[in-house]
Image 1 (cartoon, one colour):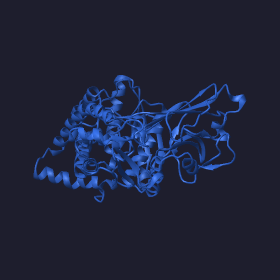
Image 2 (tube, one colour):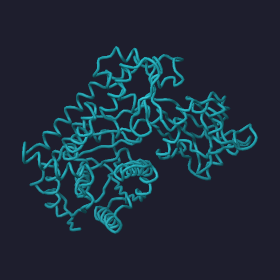
Image 3 (tube, helix red, strand yellow):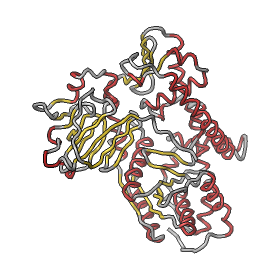
Image 4 (tube, one colour):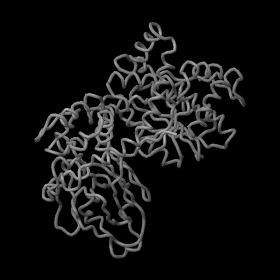
Length: 498
């Protein structure tokens, strides 16, 4: 890497720096932020992001920490990327956090594409790293070109109007605030800026692989559109995405109100608050009904990458034409089920679908939001023992108390239950399979995929709504200092746009 330490940015590139600073101010990206974790892959976008934020540091006193994830996909090239980032951190005198992932194995186990598995691994690493270093936000190098590509991809996949908003300047992913200061900068000016700075970057050769749809959009579709229709089509698409995002922000309030109106009354369905009332959906205008269905599907754990107009139209047809009981297949293992006047989302293979969900760490003290089931798990140290009454496994809200001394043996994790899971329930004899507990407690089969547990390693610590494990119960001499666990229902966490 060629690099020369400079105290100032060259005057010829003040334009890009000013645009970044304007984006930061206009969207309030750094309001109240004192420590930023900067995601640096070693590519041009992330390196430029780091240098721009470093200039902001000189003016505001902002703290920066570099984060780099080695995905383990490109062998020696990935190792060279990691060395490049470490050298850059050393030259800039900044701390760096490096993680490693086995993305190929993860994709194989979950049946995901490499792209999806890599993205999930990246955001999980960043969520862990931001907690580890105590940062207030994560900065990523998304650009105006990424915005244009994302809009085209969503149009191709039929995402519908709510999906046209592209990549927001700020959002929340897995509980971490993500900011994108380069979202209004073009990749060409970013590379020109780095060349003028005499700072090198790494080229990821997989970005040239046109077997990946995004790369075909980047290297084939967009250049063709520029030649054949509009030389500034990327700018046009990025602007349209911003306009769509503004429209979505206005529509979100209407959608929230309509979703509340369309919830099935308590007692009308075994799925409780997770069901929608068909008659109320039929009363809503088609555009608002689609928005309600989209929000509802995401709240119920439907994969965002599979969200498209085809799924919404299938459910719309179910609402319009069916009077009795019918199941409409959707993406993967999901299906919409209408039972007379109520609509629910189910997994056609029951609890097996949850195998694709990665465990989430639960710090003490701390909290973790599980958007897939609309739940917030918390853990804190405190006196006293809460004896769970055992409404039903998976029921929320729920509370329990476990031994603080046992928690020293390892970290707590929140995850879906799996086939083969066992626990020794407190107050009962012997071990029992979670599957048998769910059957005996009459948890509906289509609701079992929503049952999550607190675990330590392979040991089940707590089955919310049921009992804690006997080995984790609080001894009498620890009553003054135990771990208080709780889970409460929440609406699906909305992305924020400032």
